[in-house]
Length: 363
Image (cartoon, rainbow, N blue to C red; front, side):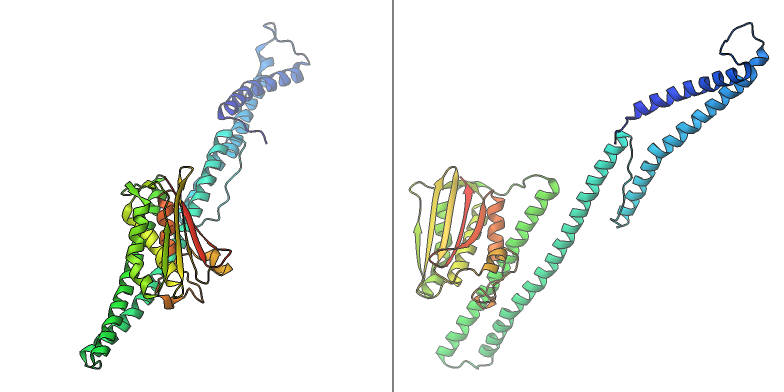
């Protein structure tokens, strides 16, 4: 359907207002005089009916213009105003009017885009709110379990249930383990909340939110993450082999966040690698990117796990379960941190067995 501009409509209305009275005048004059000849020799009385007809034509032209103006201009604007009030009231089921006036059609199209964007934002907000409630409930549950165990063992120490030095040492070791688990849960929750806030700010302001970036060495960051997890690996007799690129892999990054990302990935590998297993870490620089892979000798990911492994609070039902002590946020946090730095993290299974977490960062 062809669309007219307002100025074209106004010009056509002016033409109608000028021509329709003249057409009525000439027609009435022809009917009354049987002639189209106009002249001064005719009596004034012969022009009375044509003048009345011309006035009637002018009124008809005004009516036509007014009706068309209401149909093409006013009604669409009224309906869009009504749609805006419906949306403000929370009713998204609105029907926007069609029009042949190009300017109003453009406003309608823009309004429709805005409505779609508001609907998408509303759905996203509802999903985020549901995710927030789920995360709070799940983390509260995960915090409660080690807290109960910690309180039970501390009560046992206070009441003298553990009498021998061996029992006391065992109780203290369990308390330390549960406190470390609590620390990991709280740190995961804090980091996850921070990354969610950064992503929310970036979406809200439609721009990249700056993080505390400086030139850092990825080799050093990975080594720090390995060193922090080495005692845990030694307890399970897990060998960690690292292969760095000959050149130092430098990038602009937040060293604390990036170390947290690699610590989570390596912690996941250590917890799911059986005793006397191995973990292989590779870092290299190519084509303006720093690529890395972390391959463990565990059971790997099930097919359904590969599709959901980076979802918040998701944990597999078999080897990757709650018994390992995680909150299900570690890999989610790692992926968000790496994406915040302009890279990507993905999960897969190695052909020879074991899980592989690989990714890249801009050099």
